[in-house]
Length: 318
Image: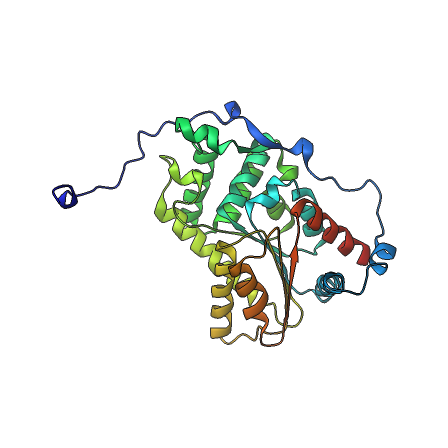
């Protein structure tokens, strides 16, 4: 009872020790990333040979919906978790963004961190278990300081987190920007929004973290994503790649605001790609949003196989 009455004060982060990013051992390198074929590959005969059974017709219908959205100049929004970047798929998604097929990205915090580190050093994904034992997990100086500085600048200037991180990478001419979706978004005018929960990301552990700035800039991005969602009516597409909680919840709220403000957002397509189908993506991306006239799909499989197949199928249809 005596301990229960003791006043507890929030921990101070000023004395946290950080370590050079270059000293970290990583699991993922751009050396292993997916690459674009040297020449165009036409999958049309292969796609035509698929059985007209179970998920094959759904896959073809989704590809056709994405191509139709591109031709009608409707949004194709890709929501994605960090594992997609760790699977080396950024070059493929950047290629679709350059071509104008993907018109917007929504990241969770992990996606932004892995993408930012890839741009900086061409590597990402530390050994969490090993570094957790020594108190080093996530305590990497450049990642935390440079990302938090960009976020603070975004809060000071009224822009979103995604734009700020992309600007920072572009301005510093990071060595591996060619592999960064954040940098590509800035280069090609594709909006990227970042949606975080305070305390979920390694950069929140750093002395440079400012919770107010993180919250404000992620909230700005939430409102920007909502603006993109208002344009989905009449053939837009929303793809969720591997975000199990944050982005399905964010999308559902953005859709609610869009409809609340009087926008008709009913006839559009959604799809969830993941290694396991989980409650929130299925309900909040695939089922509930499309009940008024849209169409939702689920596809279960490894990202490093399913997403390249989807990208190449789209390119073959264009």
